[in-house]
Image (cartoon, rainbow over all chains, first blue to last red; front, side):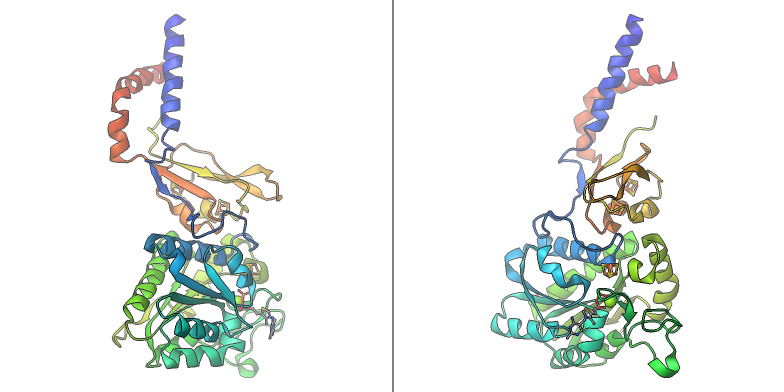
Length: 275
Length: 95
Ligand SMILES: Cc1ncc(C[n+]2csc(CCOP(=O)(O)OP(=O)(O)O)c2C)c(N)n1
Ligand code: SF4
Ligand code: SF4
Ligand code: SF4
Ligand SMILES: [Mg+2]
């Protein structure tokens, strides 16, 4: 009995010892709480915006540029990005984020500057600004979150909505005959001489999250080196709420339907090297 | 019982129960709890002690709610002194 108790004590000690694995020494991953406020975000459960905010903050922290980077938030679900990213940020009128970012970069060329935009913002109302910013080769990063829909306003069709995809303004599915084919704006800007680095990534799986993070980091490094032009990082993302799916279903649907149409990978690398 | 290699701490008040972490965990360590947090979401809990500390769950979490720990070589050295205790305990388990 005594012996058993002793062994129990030892077992208990071992359990404590095992719990102690949660020490600072053993910490391998923690949310970036310097560049990201320690607060709940307003995004729907499972929304890709949250992941992109987080990895953007990770890159900013790891590069040590919290005080040297300025972001421009769009109109769309990520309109409140400045409430989450603990960096200097500005808000732009709908679609004009890359134009606002141009102004900021030209006045403060020593700062890192990026715009963060959804597909409705960047590829619909802001098509003109996007194309001309890229054509001028502004030395900024455009971070483009493509979820194929107007998320914030309740799921209207976006230029990026897939053929046959249902939305509140294409209730029978997008009819390419009358509504046009989806706009691959990333492929479009890759054609322009002004862009230096154009890539398409996603954040639906751990490996993809790592790649997207790397892409954002590369883009900011190119910006620092002045490697000759605009860096454009598209992230194919989900909108579980307006796609009317659970987050897990939405990622699966995205993989099966969005990715064949919007294939992942680099479209253009600096020095004009195409894929 | 397998030796614990990794562990996670979940900020249950940040969690929105999206289950993306469950999907990302190849060890099937995670499950939805039956209780809700202050915001009314069914948060995530760890149900198995087989976590490897791979960080996959934390990488896909939109809320940044998961902190991951993994036994590093450094910490292995630190706990070397309890090797005996572990051995003894193995006896207990066998009993
Ligand atoms: C000038 C103007 N026109 C229209 C709107 C309405 N509006 C707000 S957000 C939005 C679309 C947002 O979609 P997207 O950029 O894809 O962002 P998401 O919410 O999907 O991330 C629209 C049309 C507006 N706010 N301002
Ligand atoms: S509406 Fe869609 S894009 Fe907006 S927060 Fe919800 S899931 Fe994300
Ligand atoms: S760290 Fe890896 S093994 Fe552990 S719970 Fe997360 S995904 Fe599962
Ligand atoms: S991924 Fe994050 S928010 Fe979603 S259920 Fe897991 S811990 Fe909660
Ligand atoms: Mg959108």
